[in-house]
Length: 315
Ligand SMILES: Nc1nc2c(ncn2[C@@H]2O[C@H](COP(=O)(O)OP(=O)(O)OP(=O)(O)O)[C@@H](O)[C@H]2O)c(=O)[nH]1
Ligand SMILES: [Zn+2]
Image (cartoon, rainbow, N blue to C red; front, side, top):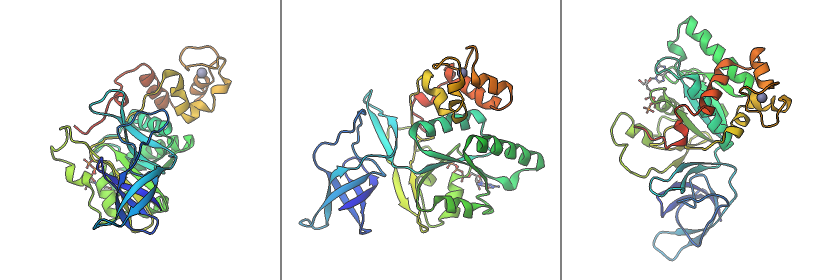
């Protein structure tokens, strides 16, 4: 029988089978995924093949096969170097909650987030939350930012999780998909999820504001079905959505607007720094590429505080 992994505790996996029932499953045999050394062979979101065992009191299952992943997000294992822990797989989209000043979300943060999403092949959507609190000037700034990112190809939406403004549009975007929510603490993730599904009580809600994090507790992601044909993956204790190592030479590929111009640079391996006849720098001078994006690019390539090379736990 086919199924999807909704929860993992390390040795047991909760699988929702195609008949809609949930089964506790174990793994049989060895699962290796090409190119990655992982501490967990099966992750939340994985599509699996299971065999049911009716002999025991409670019907249990055995995971026999795991399907190729569309994408997955990882973090480095806490204990074992060079090992990775797959947090979740087959994610359709990730929403980044952005607030202008309460708390501030800087463009460098947005850009780092988008680069990570590009590297993981996960579609990213920017939600500008708390639009009920902004004055005219701030609304203009939000609109400016939304246009900047829309022009690059990212969907942007102004919402208020509190008043419910455009929450129906978020719902629409989620239909038939598996989504994740990310953003600085206090940007309104919990409030939005509450507005989307009032009965859902996520672990992130229990953890926020307390000091349960920081110990070496292993955190496991969990998937939830919502009432309107949508699924969300909750990743308690993991800020942002994992780690990714990016080489200098490939960084520009994760800026879609840089990538598009790359073939016009004189050197095929142009880093868009001081090389002559660089199409990216020309576009920057012409105002076709935003300075804030280029600044983020420089910061990362120069290796200034490199937060996405280390584990990002909530402190
Ligand atoms: N005015 C206004 N306040 C909001 C809105 N969304 C959230 N808030 C408030 O912002 C504060 C933080 O919201 P949370 O939903 O707890 O934020 P969070 O992102 O889940 O934070 P963490 O759990 O720490 O990651 C709360 O006081 C919310 O009531 C909004 O759209 N408008
Ligand atoms: Zn160049």
